[in-house]
Length: 532
Image (cartoon, rainbow, N blue to C red):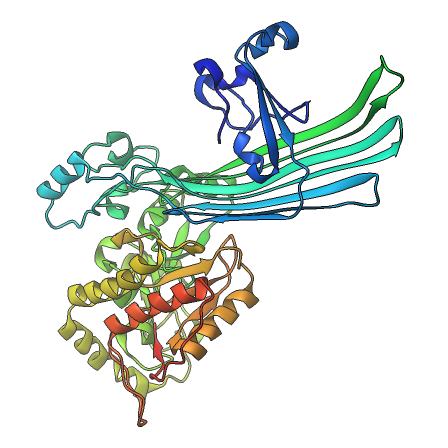
């Protein structure tokens, strides 16, 4: 928001007019609790001149405008265009008009402004101290960004007038904008933010230390829109009488968002709002975006209220840090083909021994005398050939090592994400904190939220770059494209085809997405397809 502050006084002590009509105030509650008009919502190309009255303003307009009066007068142009691309900022605009006969004019103005986040950041001293005291925890460097927010803004204006006769002119002028921005909040230090990291009796079993052991930095976002319209008729009746009758409507709306944080009371409130709830299904690692959820803490909140939780851990075993023994989860299901290399159709179900009594025995298994998981999950005729491969698959993964496997997946993921995240026009849906993702990451191009758009983008990456991704529906703000790093190098037969390492593939993925964003020419790649 850009308010006017003549004389250094509060922004709401300045009257802002557009074409002589009072401009509506922004929904933002600013410094000194001031509601002031947002001058940035008016397209700069639409402005002909700005008139400022400083002395005597309160005598003419009232004591609430002691700082002054600003009147913005729109222009009446021919077609013009403007574009500028300073560092970290992209601006483009167009303005043009038409004349319906010789009695009037209609002028349209549109502008687009994209400002990337700026940074004047150095690592915080308390983050340096925390890293030194906890060398086994990977702390981001820097943990927090200082600078201007990442902002995208679209503005438009219309100015129309039509002379009905010699004594009356009908007029209309309107402005509108839609914008959003994201910036960093303060880093939450596990060693210094007691109100966040200390345990609370209100939520037994919940702890931020298991979810954010390296601390976290919430991302504070705003989505705001403004519009104003004034219409009326004015004219002259004789030399000494002028009239202007008009009506106006203005509105400002701001929605605040907070990402990469957590409110433990939200899950508790959901449980308390549904007293008949007895079972919840939780996903540990989302197959849509790769986000790792705090299922251990949510399950603890549910258990304290007598609610059972079944955890879908299909991607957890092998892709994310998941300590089954410490999680204390009663019911878990795993799929083994995704990350352990077992054949399709092989899975596993785990039920804690003390929770077996909460599930009745299957009638088909009641005669065999067993009282374990098998007696409660009737599988019918099993594919024993596939099941016999599971020990070898587990032995192979153990030979690689969980630490090395996780490090490689994270390195491949970070390689392409670090190249793509700063690009304008792209939204990475998965946070960078190591404990919040397991290699899988999703993205979308700004404005492309339909399933069809993301399916087309996924097909484009495969057809033109031999990069295999999948589109996913389900995130709150629209569909996306999921990128999954591969642990191994792939290859295929053919005179021109060759395998690519995961590092080469991640690098090419970042470059391909960048070219897709800027709509440049794609070069046909003759390499073997490989899953990410």
